[in-house]
Length: 250
Picture 1 (cartoon, rainbow, N blue to C red):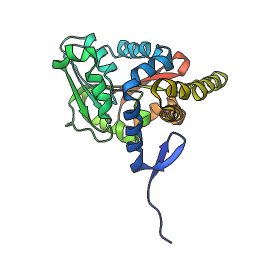
Picture 2: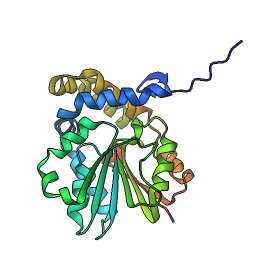
Picture 3: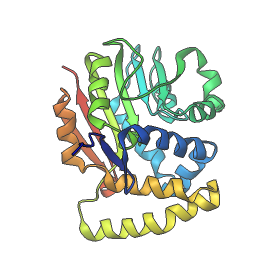
Picture 4: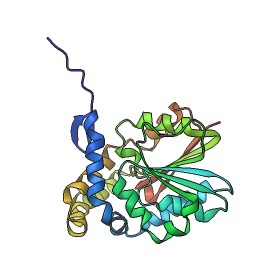
């Protein structure tokens, strides 16, 4: 009997062929690009800004560092990084060009243009040589990658020795009662917001489901270590709704 060797993965709560997921994710973010920043503020009541500022506080950018911000979308992390230290530069990479276009149109982009590049690319096959960057960040993006381990291996490859990985991602609240309350909010409110603000319920239904499919904090920390990173640590944010993960290429 012939055997079907096609690999599958998850797209939210759906099981799909691996080679279809990137196209589906591209469709989601192309659809919501023009309202993405507004929806982030509404969904999190602005708290995502504090999480990103906390990321920069722990990262502590230094003069002359070169950042690669993967799934960098509209530039939130890159802009913060460039503001923190003189002589820094940043490359924003995203699979979805409409997200990058939105980023280039932001007011900060023009003033920082000489220190900022925008690149369409895939986290699992980065279009850069080895050991090019001092810092690799990915915020609310790694759960959308088809093969997370491949993305982490690529992060390790493009970082210089002594370079740092930092991941900001939605996570799991280590309290069952609070997690159930958050799930009720996420599944009942966020897709409706998506329909009202972005005219796209389905994309935000996927985004909520993708959060629930992402590994918990300890499991993801182990994945980072298995990719070769050392001194791997994480910090919970807002009781574990999100988490910051840090690792070093030593």
